[in-house]
Image (cartoon, rainbow, N blue to C red; front, side):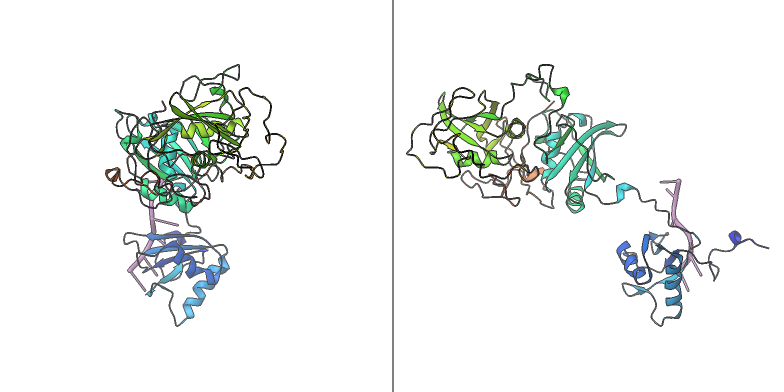
Length: 450
DNA sequence: AGCACA
């Protein structure tokens, strides 16, 4: 007569299956509740809830058929029916042998987000802007960008799925604040799903990809010309020869920038070995020495054009110094050698700098071979949100009231509603890296990268 | 109260 397949699907007896069909569920039922329900009987390998027109059916798939049988048998003879949220749930074997999840990776929370930037000028959005936007929710490990048929896309890697989720929830469907974008740019909407990736492979720091955990990662070869000395920058501009020593000049220095402030600012990118401040052209300049070029490159990229204080005060301009090792003769309020284990405090006097690479070490410079006070750069620790706390360059005073690790995306309308005044720099942030204005980071980004 | 759009 009728074959099995032609039997009505709701006939009273179904042949056993690893998959159970559940009905009369509350529509709020979650997969977690289904797992809890099935767990006493075996290993639940898959679930599907909110099935059917009324969203009140579900499936549970066990690893083993016997586990499904155990659950059916138990409730067949139990005086207590299966329940979810106090509601009786009816179980039977499914007429399928496995759950087919139409769930795509985009629905599975992960630590990497797939971000599609929509808009006519989407591809003009720089990786730095993306970094800034997403850093508000936690430490961004890596970003890669690419163009597909879907348009301009980026993968943004966080430490964990929770952080990624908070960023996704807050940013999905929102526009990048216009003041973070080059002028005359149309709106750019973010569409965010989860990526199946868990760890992005970033080979080089380039205009397309960044690894914020690894200050030693080389800059893309494409950004360096044959000499290896002078290159074309990621933004197409000529680069000076890179150096482990940065020359910082401070524009619009309405408020005192002390040695300690500079140390705090530049230490966010790696161990600062030495700092020397001096007056030049009526302004203040400083030389900041890192142990290696890569760290200096990252610090320069992150800090160039940014302001130490909100309101456009104390804007940093950075270039590479020709020095490679500063000769700090004295430790005072203008110069310091942080590699000295026990810095002697000298009477204040103008700092004296080594004027040539390899110039004779001053007293107390090289005779102390002791390691500095910093542990070796450990990537993430030192790179904790290197650029997120900085006011925008180009004299813009706009800022975004966005809290680090905040779960809530504050719309740009609120920008500037409150300001942290100069002198209110806060101590170490949650990541343990001292960082000015981290307590209330302004939300300005670097300018157009192009 | 009875089986999942692709």
